[in-house]
Image (tube, rainbow, N blue to C red; front, side, top):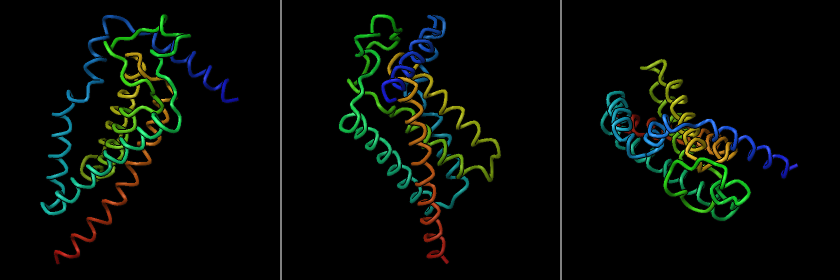
Length: 193
């Protein structure tokens, strides 16, 4: 059963990865590069700052940092300790037929995708936080996170199951830390009165 799932995942990866073209390579490389999103993250922080009072904002920033660290470290535990599934570019059965857009493939193991888990955690957390002021922001953020996951398949460094698992864990993490934020916000605001 597990072997069949891995085989289907590999076949789906090869199919999706082969759909790429040189025309779109630059776009997806830009999209998948975390640092290119700094202005976007700054905008989200600005919107959060406008919604919250200053004291709550700083506590919330700490919660977000803890969320990213938590999500990232759990991802690493799965990749390097628990699962240790080779990335597609290290899979000798397919590495000569895939499109590896990125110059380097990254670490040897890829389950599950850190880009997918971190971006979905941010999408869920910020979407839930800002939805009262910006009705469509949760949908836009989820679309952004799904595209981030797809970019990892496109450039050749993650299987679809890596991406899906990362997104599911990221959604859980984002929701968990949003609940923590609500408790922190309630405590800070009650102490202010």
